[in-house]
Length: 598
Ligand code: GLU
Image 1 (cartoon, helix red, strand yellow):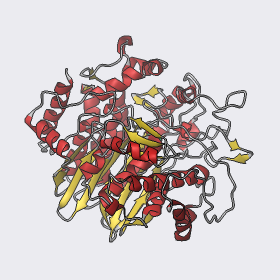
Image 2 (tube, protein in one colour):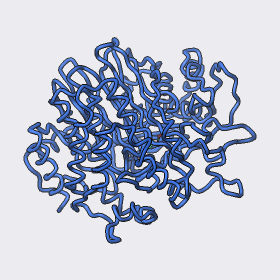
Image 3 (cartoon, protein in one colour):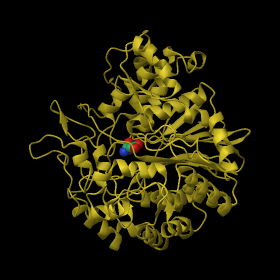
Image 4 (cartoon, helix red, strand yellow):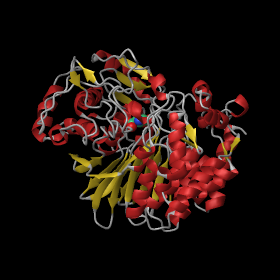
């Protein structure tokens, strides 16, 4: 099947199976190397309309509910739930079950996630932390070789050593227990049926498999699935996953607990311990796993409250710090093409990343100065560093008020993007923002019962100390690795107005901050904000997205003193705005995502 055939088939299926009009789709992965553009494809009228909308930067409009997620099958599964009276929590369960099948490289039941929930009835915002945990047998030396030096990134990733206790099944259950309305078991039916019938491999999945054949061939179950008969899956192939269908049916019947004890847990532990680089996960680690409900991290910005995920994610705090440092500058007047605006955004982000490296980690294990990092006097002190005219020559962490003294060494954590973001607003007015991940593309490459296990433990610092000081994000038993995931909900007068998030490793922070500025300062709608070319500065060099309008700023940024790196940047921003005129959805054109609403 051609790419066009694939897109057409999926969209035709969406319309015919659901009866839900496909208001728009973003099936083309126009910017990433692994998938061709959709422009030249033979397309149905519905797709043509959607592609026109995308090309024009028009968002999808709806009145009752809206979701924006990374794959059309997953959008359809969620849309069915929402259109039959389900809540955003119900829809998330159906979406996540489906993403584990059709976007297995990015997220699934073998991974972890963070979820923000705005509850319309109580008017409150809370978060659920379903991050993976390190095994109780892990030590700070987990990723050090026998000579005491850190393992290479992929040496650590591939195999059992990198696998943390999965949090996604427990998170799905916890969200459904609190906020679900429809029966749990029914939410898995679409994904289980499709897993049995088989789905058409998308160009994006095929491209990622082709680039990863060496690593996917290490473990027999993984190789048999992604490299059947030794050859990588091709776009258009029909892929069945009966083991995953059976797993979903067990979870549907018995609840998420079935993953954490009994035969499924036994199989997970056996796979990790029998993997190429055996890991330490035990049945006990699975039994004691807990989702944690935590307060969101919120910060004022332009009359809004921008709320995100606090530790163990660095996402909410680093986005909030970046925005707070910029609040004193009139970015709206400068506009999106202004080198001055980008100098300010770039250096605000660098200042926030310097603090992130030193202070942010799992606050259940190390003291993190959450309040101090956002305290107005501290922000004002740091913002004074931005008053010059050119790039800051050097950026160092600040000294926020710290209620438990802790002098630590700056950590460095490597991360490679493979994650998925889910934004949903339901007909009851609840809003859900969830970023879900197995860390690297295809995670640890260990597959069990049709699901890939995460490599999230490589989000810890491989080194435990620097210059004789402990690193906040070092490995410890039961600890959760620091994340960059930044599921976000923006409130105005206490009610949600914007739901967003993205994959992208530590660039997530820049993608989300930029989308917020694009929407709130520059007045872009959610589709324009999701599609805009990226400029991201984490550690000093400016990453400028290749092949986009962002490149026009390269010369000016070089003149301001930055090293500029042009590169592909595969974000996956999924956004829903709640406006007085109704709901508006945008899906990142760089991935296969789609916004659907009614
Ligand atoms: N593992 C990363 C994190 O939690 C996310 C990776 C990605 O976005 O692809 O920060």
